[in-house]
Length: 149
Image (cartoon, rainbow, N blue to C red; front, side, top):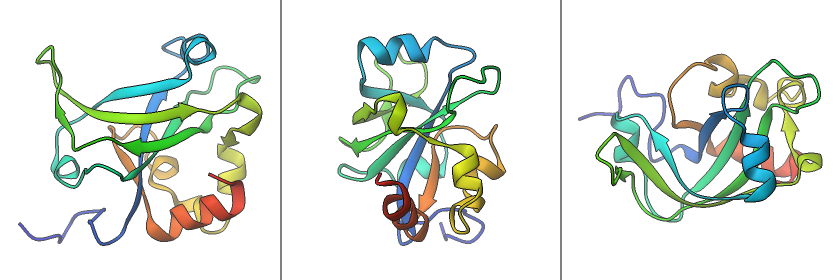
């Protein structure tokens, strides 16, 4: 299969981005007690064919209901391997070594929208898209340079 029509390719992948909805789930409570994530559910599709051990991955806390929560990039880590079927047989997951940072270190959507290179992140353009999302190499470099991720 060719890369034509695909938004992300192996040549341009900077980092994966997985999302969790903090309005629907108590992610704040979960991560306050255990900031490590060892796996996360993803949707099947061509992107899973591109996943491999060692690739960077970011966690995106999504939502809009609370004004006291910084929705945006909450953590970073690496894939421990390619996407795999879940052990319960219900879908797919990414094996991760990812840690959620302290809330003071989170990078919010407004900060990202104000940055020329990051304003066009897929997660900002298509917030309802399925996991995983991605950053290009250029976007990931800009995120690390501007915000230390």
